[in-house]
Image: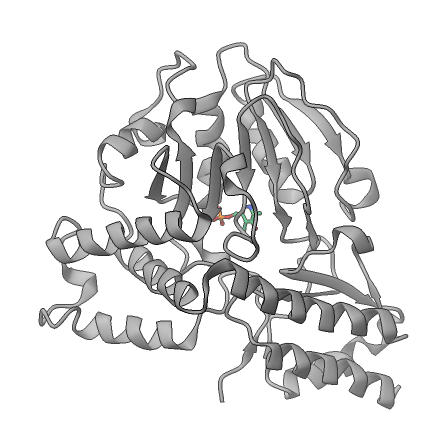
Length: 355
Ligand SMILES: *Cc1c(COP(=O)(O)O)cnc(C)c1O
């Protein structure tokens, strides 16, 4: 039996995507060739990447003023590419510090510029999203993290800023409806909600580029990738293919509105149990809790071995919290079923019975 996979990333993908991907490894498009051995410039792969691109635009409801790129280097390379492409020499980008990934993005930007950290929840262990801040109109751009994978917090709204709005959506892209036209640049490592590790999605509004006057190394320059249709160098063919299959699956499910409804049900079910069950307590403040990653702890750590035994026996995988937070983290990405969340809730109730 397949495990209930609550892993934070790489993470669960739809079973039918795994099945289709495994067939393509043996014989892709009846070419009598594996997807792993065809040229990235072949007609068959060009169709894959074009289809992935148009699915991204369709699902996010974006027009032709945006470009969709599939790059490598993960979201971590975007921490570097964003300031290279958008911060002027001597400029002053603004960042919201909501967790480990935001802090890493800030650190990379600081190599190039003085960074204005508009607010931070670090002192409170990143258990909430700061809301009371202003972004300077002269900032090069404003960078935020929509979902804080490690701490289990999520931005429920985004500020209206007069500067380009840049967002790391690695762990909640395609999980909920937003007005994506509000953003000028969105990036996401594929391995949290879109596909396997190795592809990084970048969605950029073309008119924000080319304004810094910087001499940007070719691989780091969005315009170079745009001009070469994401084929400046060999893209991660297999990761792009599997991402395309997952985007297609999502589209077939009814797109983002349909998946958001299920994601909300899953989160409601789990958070209700965390609140109700006296054995557990939530990590993040209620109003900022993530629908993707729920973080929680045992009230009495002495029950850890007992609880771990219960959920492992129930076929659950990947529930341990990030090493920097401890406790538990249940990641409920798009492909995780409501039934899997019910299995976890049953385990929590079983612990309460045994205690
Ligand atoms: C996982 C994660 C990253 C890092 O992604 P890589 O693709 O491993 O570089 C960055 N930001 C967020 C919000 C993440 O969840």
